[in-house]
Image (cartoon, rainbow, N blue to C red; front, top):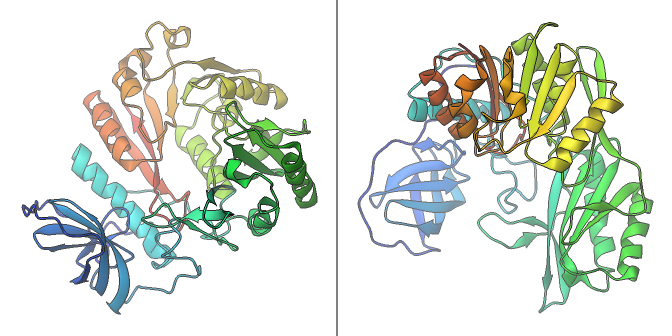
Length: 452
């Protein structure tokens, strides 16, 4: 990956001062200068910074204002007058309408460059670090990768119809989708048949949203805002039997399977070791099977855990990193905040005949000094926090007294913030690389190896 990309440039720090409101819906012709970290075109006009979804550098475009404040304007590209040389026709017929995939007008190679440049910019701006060397990015097939999706629903009181699809860009409106290119083939087929089922329900206004998942089996979760009738449950059950998928229901309590005891699971193969991880609908599971495999393998390769070493896995979830690490280490201590996932991670370890992984429930935003698992020294620590990052646990890293730390981040901004804290504690970056978990979107994940 090149260190700089002449075609994809980033937002400057200029601060416009005009405080007059620009009305929503106003149309304007602009020439785009550069790209933001999330793939929107940027230019300065009316003493404001304009962020234009769907526009590329060098392009002259007609835009429509979506929102504005005194210093910035959010807008949407309505018409490309002079296209960029790299612009491509989005393969999806819903691109620009559906809010799910905002980068389809950019070739995939340039998408990867944009995401790496975004990570570089965050490190420079937040942590004042310029990383000279990046590992090759982890990439997958750019379409048909997504094994988990949330389908929006809303009952239209005027038309007396249940609207089904994905949220529209810049709107709460629902776009009816009958062919989603980023879903796995089996989930796309399930999505295509779903409206036929939901429109038969006697109480469609009680449907909150639908979740789809593809693992060893497909599953459909129906979130309902009021109890469903026996007739509607039977309609959903019959549909799932026809589609060969599990039915899960969720009201005010946790998701529950309907008339099935079969676990949902997904395979994980690393270093010729085959694992199987069970989960329940509602549990966090990585959305991209291929990237998850590559990500876990890269974590093992970078940490190089030895048979006499103890490892701490924080924000462990279902054991996605824990179990493969336990195959190499003397022991792995794994910590997660959600009790249900801790219990399931224990079951996953037992199912895979792993006896050297030990799981604990703890709030990692609080002091860890009194935690029993924090009383020992670890050769390595792995962090895989949510988007908020791991600032509180990073502040306590001296307590853990580890020389190697692997940080897996789904938010380069909070990663850069936490990196600054680690460097202040004597850690240095040894390796860094991006992982494209969500092709066709601006979402970027980064893995960084620190050593002290």
